[in-house]
Image (cartoon, rainbow, N blue to C red):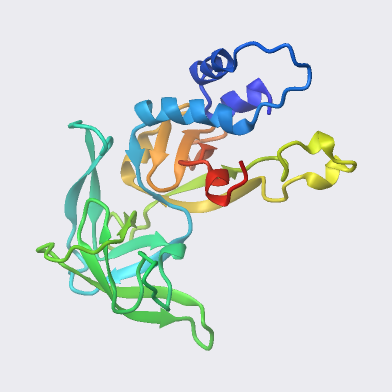
Length: 264
């Protein structure tokens, strides 16, 4: 948690300065400032400035069986869907798309809004799809692909909305990117209070995903560019990026997970 580290992850000087101004002044020598306060100012700025894009971290192949292999429907996705903004980017919709593996399960339930056998979901900016078949790896329970049908008339209105990435054309893989996910370095709020603070390190403070799939527009990103990956968080292009592969650092999640877990 150094200034250099924050800046490399994509935190702006504006967000850091706003955080400092928001702290005010105290006479206490032992005041503890939670990391969530800094994250609040980071999210506040990025919500207003970061364009949206779709990236799938852990891809699960979905074959659209009622769409021809050679067909490619060009759709428009909004860079700022929460505003009256005309800015958009093009996304291809073909007969092979990828969704997050965590957005599919075999057993459905009332509180689950992802895809399941016989169930429909809406693809963000695209069409409703319905799962018609599940293909397993031979002699295992590992799912290798899903078969689905899309509704070109958009008659259905499923509750679940999923982000996705499609093959740009038949046989061509989507844009591959590396994504680095950062979590808190320590498991507790104040490791200084612990007798053995070294044992409090978070073993999952950094996760590297080598082969995430991204929409084509991200192929034009350069070092320092920042985006909101829909449903995933805010990300910035790392200086390690090269012509062969882009690398994105997660700046911050979309919401404070501690609020959901009641840790505050």
